Image (cartoon, rainbow, N blue to C red; front, side):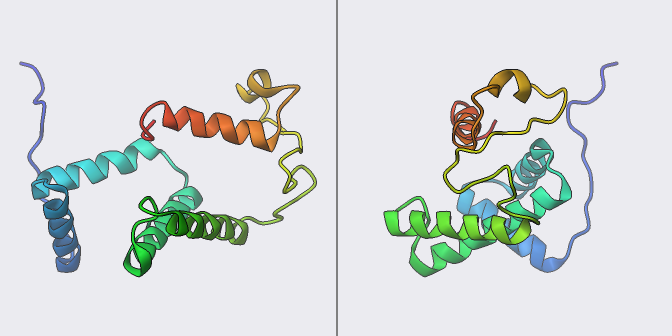
Length: 147
């Protein structure tokens, strides 16, 4: 007999978390179960280390706060520019030794790829902060921002 495609489970959670998920499900046109399943799937697909996860959570909170103040970052230029600057500042605050010898604000510094990584073949000898960051953006834009 084939294993089941889905497994039914029970989950305990704080009442406030349940309320937040219920509101989010309604806002997204999902059932409660679909909303929880989607959010768990996304969190696992990210595969982020703890510091990256913490940064993503903070960015999400900033996006929500900005939406309360002046609308979603993706709806107007002022909000988008404000959000961009806030994310940059947050990364600087959370990065020890920011702007070390390899990085410059002009984006002309050379990358130091991790030994054995595809970055060595992909970007040498012309790797700069600008073209590596452009490649990163292209890698997620080509998949609708989810890959």
